[in-house]
Amino acid sequence: MINTELSNITEILLNQRKFFQTGKTKDVDFRIEQLKTLKQAILEHEQAIIQALQADLRKPEFEIYITELSIIKEVDYAIKHLKTWIKPKKVAVSWEFFSYSARIHSEPLGVVLIIGPWNYPFNLIISPLVGAIAAGNCTVIKPSELAPHTSHILAEILAKYFDLDYIAVLEGGVETSQKLLIEKFDHIFFTGGTAVGKVVMAAAAKHLTPVTLELGGKSPCIVDTNINLEHTIRRITWGKFLNAGQTCIAPDYLLVDKKIKKDLVDGLQKCLKEFYGGQPDKSPDYARIINQKHFDRLVNFLKDGEIIIGGETKSSERYIAPTLIDNVSLVDPIMQEEIFGPLLPIIEYTNIAEAIAWINSQPKPLALYLFSQNKNLQKRVLQETSSGGVCINDTLMQFGISSLPFGGVGDSGIGNYHGKTSFDIFSHDKSVLQNSLWLDLKWRYAPYKGKLPLIKKLLG
Image 1 (tube, rainbow, N blue to C red):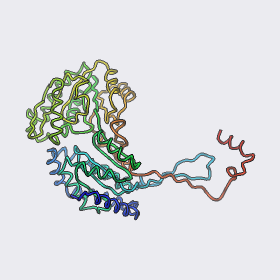
Image 2 (image 1 turned 90 degrees about the horizontal axis):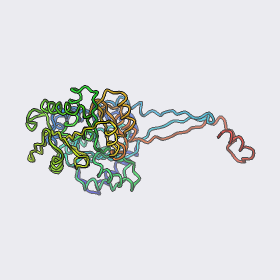
Image 3 (image 1 turned 90 degrees about the vertical axis):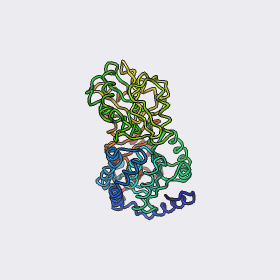
Image 4 (image 1 turned 135 degrees about the vertical axis):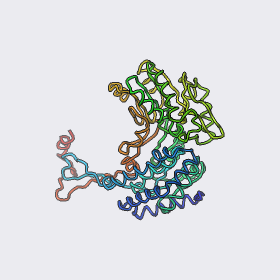
């Protein structure tokens, strides 16, 4: 673990700025080489990463591969496309600028800060790092102290493969984050809760530092009658209870058409037993809650509504069974904040307008899910609601598409990333206008006498 004394942080930033000023990170071949090194580092330490994630969250190895180590695909995507992304882009000019050419150059911002969360503590550090490297920046990383094993392995791996003047990992708690936020960065990328996001944004404002905030919120899941019930049930169950529900885009609650509610609930109960057996605490495929604080918060939610299945807890293991909850009031505590755990409230509606009205009365969510084969209903929900993203007839999978920007809106976040969007957020689009010297019309120069009618005609 790197010493995170304030003086040391300042020194690291100074050295990174000096390295950035050498211009080395602007070279596209250097960037590609660093991305290849990052991929190599991950592959060579795969087992250590798995062990760290299991120690922090008791994640099943399968889930680690599909949700954490799958970040390799994002690295490959950047390596494949970077030379295209970095090319200056020509843009059109109007006829009156016939002697000009215009283009946009993407240039790196400088030294950037990435603050990661604890729920996917490896992926959600490496993913923005890919963008920072691809765009040509130097990077300071602050992993979550709530996932200490993963934080340590990140620090060890990145220190082994990258110079501190280029990529630095600073471990520690809130005090470390506070010290980092005192400093000036050229961009801050934060993934976490809305409350801390506000703190990050306030600190960034003092230096006029741009931010990307990947937050969360209560992502609704609408279930219509026009569905394949079996497929719908499996996809909801998987999306909600993956990582014990500790996913920022997990379905937070279901809004189910009254006509199909009983069949859906019956199917969800059967599916839970199929996935995790009659005793999920014995299942090797079910994760645990990150710490006691979050465990206690979730246990308090069990007081709301009526438990259909689940509800069992083991404090010593931080285990909460996959739980379906019925008869929840919209004013209950469980409906007032993001659940971020394995509790799924089920709310029925008789008309889709009710469901849409409820969604629109709440802060804009990070994700919205709709299960329906009705094209008109799909179109209506897309037009009448606002969310960071929408996934129709599936859950979570939108996160894995590199060509789709991922991010929130309103309370669920600011800015997008993934694929080229990650490159874009860590780049500045520099406008370049060039005129020729072979012709110089005098219409814009003084004296202006007699030229006004021509200007009016041009501007008209």
